[in-house]
Length: 171
Image 1 (tube, rainbow, N blue to C red):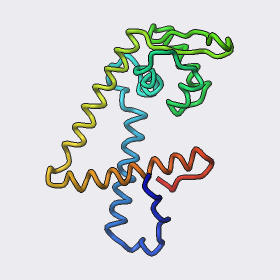
Image 2 (tube, rainbow, N blue to C red; image 1 turned 90 degrees about the horizontal axis):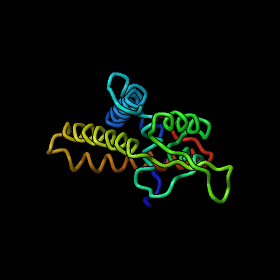
Image 3 (cartoon, rainbow, N blue to C red; image 1 turned 180 degrees about the vertical axis):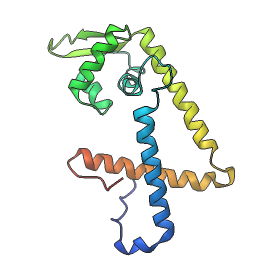
């Protein structure tokens, strides 16, 4: 794992290129938040984007997953996950079952219809990513890849810091 970059230097505030990148990152993060919040309001899909994020970890698993673990994987709270699971079960997209070792634990698995809904979102997301990647000029792709890898690593590090009690830098 690469070492963490140093904290920003206040004297860098005069670096126009750095400021432009910060502004572009701000626009990117705002766009992603808007897409997450409103990305499917006008599109007919079986499940919403938040429901997809809850269901997606189930698609590659053979065994049902406890609701608490599913909430962690979807980065939501157990009560929110429980509410969504009940709704999704009512629509035939998941099945709930009691854990054989601890009847207090509810496990969740996808139905065939739930699997189709997740696969539909995966196709939509893959198409969106391809469109975004195609927006980068072929001559700039190597540099863009290096930059995106650096940003992705820093975001992942910030998430780990944040979830362990720290605070990520302002986005």
